Length: 133
Image 1: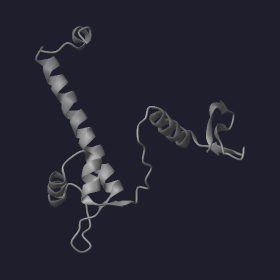
Image 2: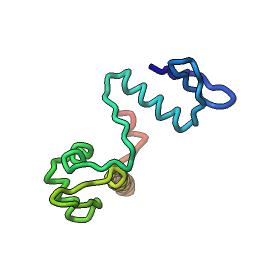
Image 3: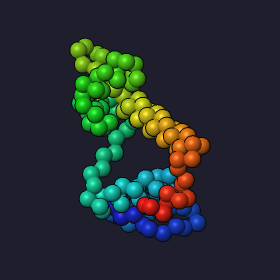
């Protein structure tokens, strides 16, 4: 099993393999591996999958946290691209993740708009309300 060396050197982060050899990691890759190790140490399950992976409707629904019929409605409404080789729908992971990101952005924008409208109406004071948390 490999160990992540938890220090920074001039050339960036390093990974030490079981044979003792060091491999230089980009900052991006180091952060991903650090997140994986942190999640695993907290007992969380981790799946690392290439983005060109193709999912079944059940797998895609599980990833989004929705029912399979809800996912099928999203597919049929054109919200998420899919292929249908034969009878079964297949969804590319990258398309599913792109949809998930669009939904998150839309939710965040909606929340920001609600806060802004509440502030404009004098119903919300972020400084005063922060003390109530």
